Image (cartoon, rainbow, N blue to C red; front, side, top):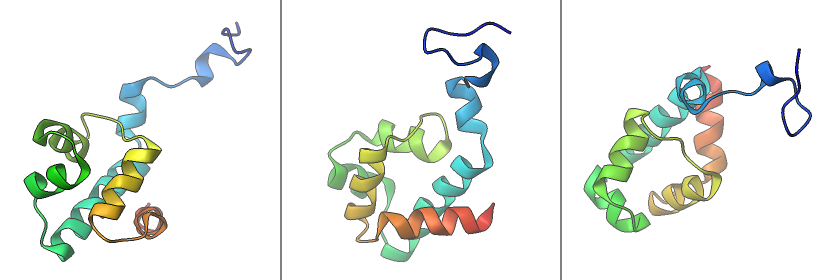
Length: 94
């Protein structure tokens, strides 16, 4: 097996599409959606609170876009929840 530029086996690296399909990522999206529902906050309001477009929020929640760590922190803050709780809820589902 060949190694990539970082010295890792080439097969070990996942593509963006692979990451989006992981069960854990889907569970995190559902955790965010449930927190939105509990808070009574829709996608447009969440987008406004995190300073992003509706399209951004929609893509994240549909699973068409990966979510960076800092974006998760922003979303949790906008929903007034602990990001660790979002992750814990997601992991308990998988």
